[in-house]
Image 1 (cartoon, rainbow, N blue to C red):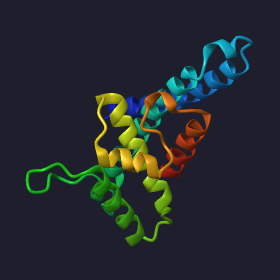
Image 2 (image 1 turned 135 degrees about the vertical axis):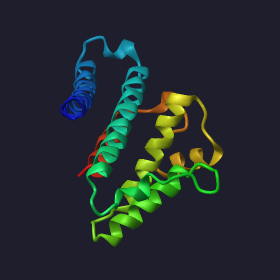
Image 3 (image 1 turned 90 degrees about the horizontal axis):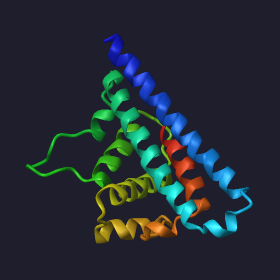
Amino acid sequence: MKKLIKFRRDYFLACADDGTTLQEARLAIQSHPLRAGLGDFIEASLCRLLIVNRVAFVENLLNYWKELDQHEVLKAYFPAKQNDREVSNEDRLHSLMSAFEREDFDVDDGVFKKYLALKYFRNFIMHGNLKPHEKDVLKEQNFPSDLMQLNVEHSKEVVRVTSEMIR
């Protein structure tokens, strides 16, 4: 058990360090004298890495908290298959919001909607495909469906939303 706790602590510290490093790298690149020659693709790349890092961090933290959750509030986010089909990310987040509301947690549905968009974007980065309804969610939440169109404002929104999710 001690090894598992140490692994989780180290994992969460590493994720936090990675997120900080990505943010610091962005600041260093922005002030670099050759920045103009680098183009916006660097910002898009850093934002993609930040999305993968921060969504993984939130997902793993929710999973860890689920094990400590005596009221089974987080169980709603980790359901078994329904009728032999996977539960959609949208259904999972809606269930989690409802569970939080039942327990009188302060819920900002705008944050959950943005987080859903980030999950879709992370899946797009990792798996290379984006379903039409996922593209619609990205557009509704002011994220591009083009991986190369991410910018510093998107990076700031990633940090804001994921920070709110774990608050």
